[in-house]
Image (cartoon, helix red, strand yellow):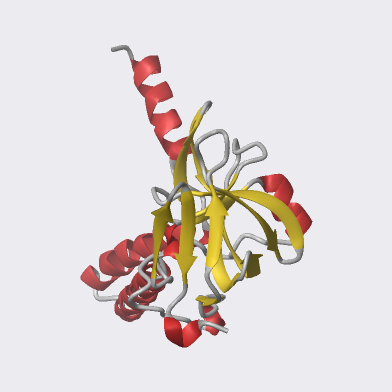
Length: 219
C-alpha cells in the first residue's frame, strides 16, 4: 500500500465520521483536556482548571447520549424537554390493518397533519420518514441529536432524528415520537418498534394485523 492510498483511506474514514454537534463538542472537550493536562504538568494553574472543565463537559455529553439512546427503550420513557426530548406516548382504541396484496401491512397515517403511507415494520427499531414527508410535516432534525446509520442502495448514510408532535392512524395516536429522516426511502415511511412496543400487543387474525393499546391508555 503506497502513501497516497493510505492517505485516501484515512480521508474516507474521516469523511464517514458523523459531524454532529455532540461529536464536535466531544472532540473539543478531549482536545481541551489534553491541553489542560499538558499545562498542568508545567504547573500552570489554568491547566488544571481547563482539565476539570473538559472532564465536566465530557460527562455532560455522555449523559446527553445516554438520555437519547434510552428513548429507544419504551420501558424507560425518559423525557427531558430542555434537551428537546418530549415524552413519547401511544393511546387510542384497537386498530385492524388488512394484509396488502404485496404481503405487507400498510396504514394511511397523518404525521403532524400530513397524510402519508406507512409500512408497519416490526423489524425496525425506530419509525422513519422520507425527506419529502419530513419537509411537508415540518420535521426539524434535533440539534445535538445522535444520527442513525442506515443502509441504502448507495451505501451507509447518516440520518438525523426528529420528534413528531403526533402520528395518527386508525384509532391510534402517538405523540412526541422520535422518527428518523431517512434518505432513500422513496415513498415508503415506516411505523417502527418505538411505537409498536408501547402498545399492549399486536396479533394477526386471518391475515389482519390487530394493534391493541394498553387498557389504561385506550380512549
